[in-house]
Amino acid sequence: MTEQTRTIDLTAGNIWDNIWHMSWPMLLVMFFNFLVGLADIYVAGFLGPEIQAVVGFVGQLYFFIIIAANAVSIGAVAMLSRAVGAGRVEDALTAARQTLLFGVLCALALSGFSLLFERQIIALAGFPEGIREIAGNFFTIFVLALAPNYMVILSNAVFRAGGEMRLSLVAMAVVSVINIALNFLLVFGVFSFPGIGYRGIAIATATAMSAGTIICLVLFRRSMWKDIFSGSWLLSAGLVRKLVRVSWPAALVQISWNTSYIVIYNILGRLEEGKITAMAALTNGLRIEAIIYLPVFALNMAASVLTGQNLGAEASGRAERTGWKISLAGVAFVSVMALPIFLWAGELSSSVARDQRVLEEMVRYLRITMLSEPFMALSLILGGCLQGAGDTKGAMLVIVSALWIVRLPLAYLLAVAAGYGAFGVWLAMVISMCFQGIAMTVRFRNGRWKEVRPWGEKS
Image 1 (cartoon, one colour):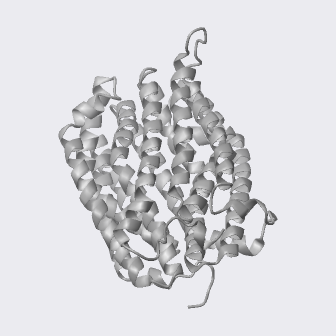
Image 2: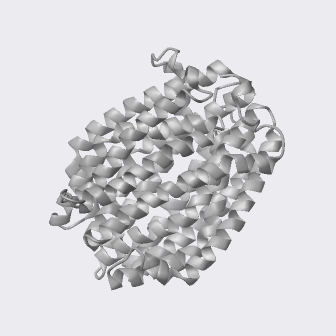
């Protein structure tokens, strides 16, 4: 890996050009992920609202057990992008190897734990007994594909840290096409193949991620990381400690975020009326809302790499200017996107909701949540800047406070204690997101993230 292999210097030149270079491939990656999620829900819609509710809940559980991969990917981007920006080639390669090795070991450990306690984990949703069996089947298949999923997530983090977003785009495009095609083929069948029903949704994801692992390994040979296979693959306690130090706050964020949705589903399950309707509406609504999350997550990941590389090049002022520009662009773009979703919530909802009661509740969910989308953009993009700088603790404090001090207590009080039902849950989600966006802006503005040293360097 040499400086000549880099397609663009993210620490110099026009900031908007660098933002565009990092953002547009990531936007397409997010779009492919969205299509996969939408296909899951669309196919499940033909199988009934119970299956849709299960897909949504198990999806949240699955995100919960890939927390380590997501957290390590955030820590890896902070360390790798800082090393790349500073021109420390061997440090970057060594950290990339440790990231992949540590991630696979985490996946194997979590797979064993999840299979051992599968019944207790599924019971958290409070589903009726018949639906629990379906959820358990889904969950087991997903868990068996955990290691390939970890490899795909962490490989893409390595590509991203070096600014090679097009390689991530190639990998995820192939994974998504395989996943979507198998969704329809395995569930409904084709020609003489009768299909296997709801299990096909989970098997499609597992197969696609296994193929994705092979694709990523091939792409490493064509990247600036091509020498990653030639070094030592022994686990380094020192590097792992540094990686864990940066990653654990991101893991806590993921735990808090995904646990909060499990608690939200549990609160909806306590409603006296319309519990399954509300759970299905939330599942479907999150898929539609993901349309807005697409550009925001793209900008979040772009902001993380741009911040890390500029700080590595000792250009903290440029890193801050980039953060403000990318966040304001995200707020403007999201605001424009939220308006048509608010106005045509019914038409959008009808594309995935077959049941009339689910459709009506889904429309109400979307129209309420659209009010907080600009604050969501601020929180996620500026949070990406903090994480790219290695200030994962700062981002953690903001998000965990918004979820556990504001969102969940307020959701219970409004929905169950005050009797507002699902509307109370939707309202609590909006209020907490507004709080989170404002708090993240304050954290970024105080500038302490510029002093963080993810590699343990002295200031």
